[in-house]
Amino acid sequence: MAMKRMLAVGAFGAAAALLLAGCAAGDSGGGNDGEISGEITVLTNRTDLVDTLLPEYGAEFEKKYPGTKVKFEGITNYDQDVTTRLAGGAAGDVLALPNGLTRSQITEFFEPLGATDELSEKYRFAGEYAYDGTTYAISVGGVASGMVVNQKVWADAGITEPPTTPEDFLAGLKAIKANSPDTIPYYTNYKDGWPVTFFDNERAIFADPDILESFPEDPALWEPGKYAYITDGLLYDIVHEGLSEEDPLTTNWEQSKPDIAQGKIASMLLGSWAVPQMKDAAEEVGANPDDIAFWPFPYQTDGTFHSKISGDRASAVSATSENKATAKAWLTWFIEESGFAEHEGAIPVPTDSALPQAIQDFADTGVELLELNPAVKNVGKESEIFKAAEIDGTIYRQELIDVARGAADGDWESVTADLNARWGAAQADIMG
Image (cartoon, rainbow, N blue to C red):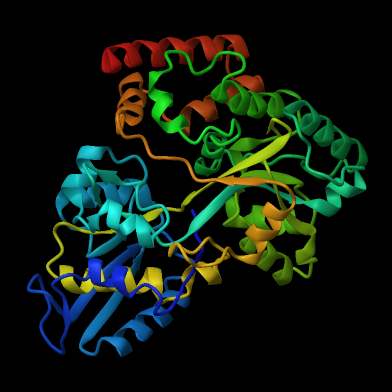
């Protein structure tokens, strides 16, 4: 998937010192002796930037730290390939975390970055990959959750404000279908898989900052009124009502960018990180970037939209790196000085940095941005339950789509009954 970035040059010297404890600049060698020098390899899922923007950042880092060399390796099948490489001890020096790692894998595969309490004073999202008071990975930019829309298409169908309920959202999609039959009201990106997981990225809709702690304690997530029932239910209804692409097996993530820019697609649940990509696509195809807008998920608590802000895919230093000093220096520099978050329209990680204008504009419409507290008592339990229940966030939603479109047996009731049964059994076993 994609990301975002920004920086705050020179304002976070204490945090830099924390991450770079024991490191000093040098002009040769490099390794685990604290000297910032020598070569490192950075693994990235941003294959679109590996030959363009990232080498420019590498050159800036090498200029600041003479004697260093930064190489980049872009990996398309990132999660699967990098997880395999981590297990084999060949995952470079700095890397974006593949999705799906467990707590034990993270603490085994990556170097500690510092005490979470101290890092949290300087960085947003420092607790997202923290265990026993130590942070092992940190995002290089934050995002808000929500819906990327072509607001012109919505306006042409008579909707100029974000729908406040799932029912109103469905009504809006139907209005788009009636007004513009050639437009796909909602695009699932089914074939690429990962976009469907964004229906589990809206956990702030109840305005509960502690939902991550309570989530593993719930024995039945897919019951009426509960979070998973609401979000997955919207996905099911969109597809069941014929408001998504006709053939989800042929969706194309890259093509969806110019398509939404040109009004061939009206809506996709993603994150704020996608907005600049869609606007860039609009410019490339001669469409109007201003048609791209970011709306909250269609659900309000006490009359207010709530959007989760969180770190995007986090980065870490490999425990098998033979040049940890330079690797840590790179990660710190990238967070604080590269300007990557700003370039990508992301929330900068340093806590005293301003929000990017697009997200500030989003908040100014009345959306409350909420950073969820990481689970402490139940840390790691949720992923353990999902794994034990054999519920994969991508696969089960693809299966849900198949049922909704009539390509597989069942209905909403049978799907949720099966999910509740599997989750409930695993939850009882793990939570006791």
